Length: 145
Image 1 (cartoon, rainbow, N blue to C red):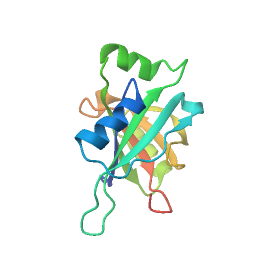
Image 2: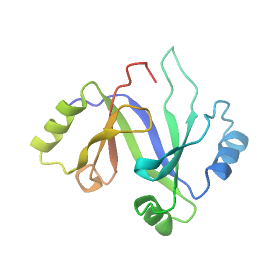
Image 3: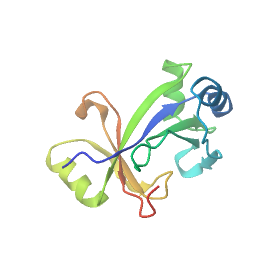
């Protein structure tokens, strides 16, 4: 297993609208994508682009707001009412090979690969096996985003 590009940092928020104002007005973000619902995961998502350097894509901030009925993000927000860092997401060239490698190492993969917010396959690895950080593994998007 090789560490791939850090694609995004997931930030849970009680309000994407309020978070957009923060990233725009306080952090100076100039590229904020339109929020959208990812109903099968029970969340609303909004990506905030960070600046690019040396021709490489910048890492994104993924704002995550729970939709009604979402227990995991709602539980996170119950413990962290203002929101906060939820996960880190790294890219891999092949999601199925990565999953098999994590399992061989004895890491707890949380569920089967499924389509994530970028339209590519993802899975999560338990934070207890990843230095205390919930880690999303994402197949590198074919279109570069």
